[in-house]
Length: 149
Image (cartoon, rainbow, N blue to C red; front, side, top):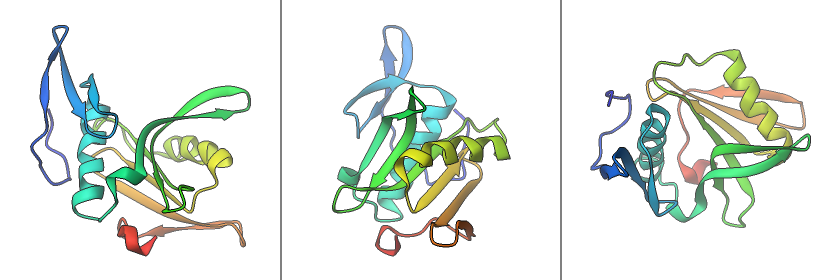
């Protein structure tokens, strides 16, 4: 798989039913190894090891209902009261981060109303802090530590 702009780690990859799969520590099972999944596993590891996000407060593939349609947030980070705090959307490294990608995560946020939105393709990472009082958002220069959320 492609090198990412994320710290390397000892990722657990093996063949399951003849297809490459990666062990997702959060879901506790092997998942098909796609380029997007490669980014997710590296980014979640980065949040835990570099940014201090508690692994027990991160969940992958969280289903939401949006306009009577079932959608899935790639990852959701919760605060200590178990309220959603961050939505993270991952794309394959060959997918450019465009306005359409942000539009997707903003739609998910209609349901969850989190304080932070993060988008990553493994090469570029963007984080926004939402301000619901002024109906604005601010791009942050880097992904905040969990203690700063």
